[in-house]
Image 1 (spheres, helix red, strand yellow):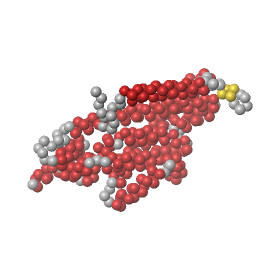
Image 2 (tube, rainbow, N blue to C red):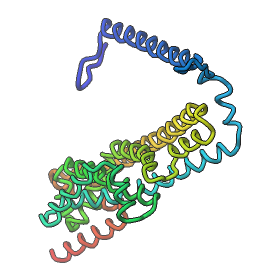
Image 3 (tube, one colour):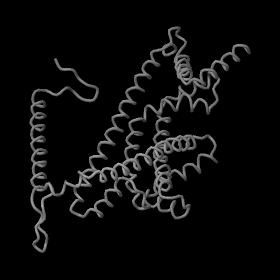
Image 4 (cartoon, rainbow, N blue to C red):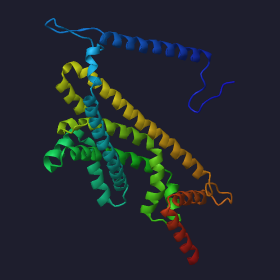
Length: 324
């Protein structure tokens, strides 16, 4: 017996057969492409003047990796890349929160200038931003790279967080206000955590983009991994260029896959905690008080999970009971 999904019916025998055939053909095509690439790299390189150079897979192109100083240079490039990316990630998240709150501000004097700045930074190329910061502010190569990445990616993160907050049910905000929280506390302690979890896959993808954009630091002579590899190829000779760039590609892939894996783990952990919070007291309304009371209970649970929000909500609730 087949089970229908929400979006489409379960595939039948013919559809499953077609899927298997397409999968087999796809695997064969990919294997053939990889085989052709390996064969092409194994062929000797013939220059225009007739000189023959060893193939890319020749041992003479890989012996440089046996030198310890090569790995020390590569290690310094990896460290500079991770250092700039880590600082920029933290700064981009903080700036993104400010952009999101500014875009959602009730006051037009805050909302309109924030929107103009956000759209300007989103449309500005990161490369030009790094050059502008270095030449105008004279910050040095490291901070030129970091500040440019913070501003650009902060604008992207801010727009993602704003979209996450807007997509929430209005009852969340109303419930926070009903238990005595101010509008700012409601947005910070109830709406923002839910929007952050909801937009976490997008945020992780943007952090991966940020990590790759550190390679633009060559324009300001920042010694990140890509520039380090380029300088090593110039130093040891163009014959080792393919070797160094292949090592850099493998390192970039390893770092990006590690960041993506960590992001998926964080998303699953946050989703699991959110499920437990939804199943806790206040998530349902057994007394039949209606959806507003249930939403207020859920907002109180989220506020209590925030630590300081629990004390604020309890004080507001206590003041309301004394007045009554």
